[in-house]
Structures are given as C-alpha cells and as structure tokens.
Image (tube, rainbow, N blue to C red; front, side, top):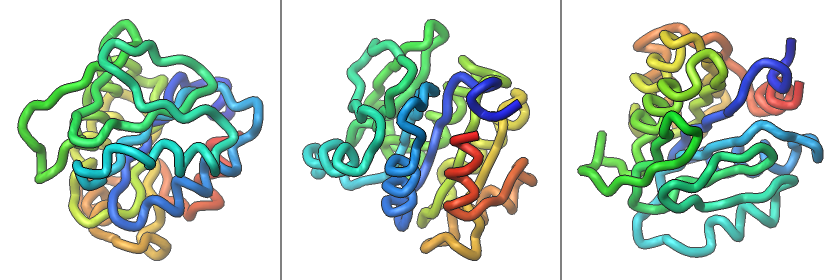
Length: 188
C-alpha cells in the first residue's frame, strides 16, 4: 500500500539548504494529493511575511500558515509560523507555542515531530531534510518508535549534512532517499 492509502499526515523538517527541496516536493505533488503536509522549517524570526507566498507560487496544493486551533485538513500544506513552535493536538488541530527555544530553534522540528507522532502514531510520515543543526533527530526517532514511517534526505545530496547525519547517528530511518525518490514516495 502506498503513502496515500496508509498515512494521514506527512511532516517535513528542514533548515539550511532545505528550501529548494521543499519547492521541488510542492511543485511535483500530484494535483489530487490529499494527505496534509506539515512543514517545520527553520527561518529567521524577523522574516514573518513572504515565505508562504513564495512557496505558494511553486505549489500544486494550498499553503497555509496556521493559527492556534486551526483544523488539519486534507489537500493542504501547512507552514510553521516564524518564531512559534507548531504542535499537534489529539483532535487533529494545531497548537502554537512561544515556549523557549529548543536547540536554538523556534519552531522546533523535534517538538513538531514529537507531538504529531503522538497524535497520529503509525499514520504519520516524518521526513528530515538538509539542515545545520540536529534539531529533528530525537523527534523523528519518536515517530519511528510510535510506528510512523521515517525518511531522511540522502546526506550525499543534502546541502548541509548536519541534520540528516544527526538522525543517522541516533538510529536507522526506514528510508534514506534523494529528492526525486522522496517525491516519488510521497506521490505513491
């Protein structure tokens, strides 16, 4: 069974070097893609505007920067707002938090993965892309322990290898894929 038949959410974490990969993924999604995609990307807190618009120009699905208590709906991609942790609640809604930074980051990829894996369990796909710190590794491990599918970008392809290598140093993800393979897997 492919991604579309088994999973209810795809959560993608990335930092330095991940933007071109995110653009490729969004640009090559099947037009009838229905699984919600949640993107937790490190960005400077002063860049609050323009990021959603830039991604929307390249995406085959709607991009939303959610508010607190926004329902997670099929066929949409959600981007963590600048300077907020993006969390999942059990009723499949978002929660935003301004709690302290985690591994020098807000939003924290670890916290996003941890809460989404708790809410979605084996119905979650977690993906880590290029990045300059290892935020995301422990959260992705929680996803794996709770039965979710774990994917990392191949370190040979990642612009900045620290984030994906942080995952490999902690555990063996289910898949290590290049960008085109990630896109094919998501669209399967």
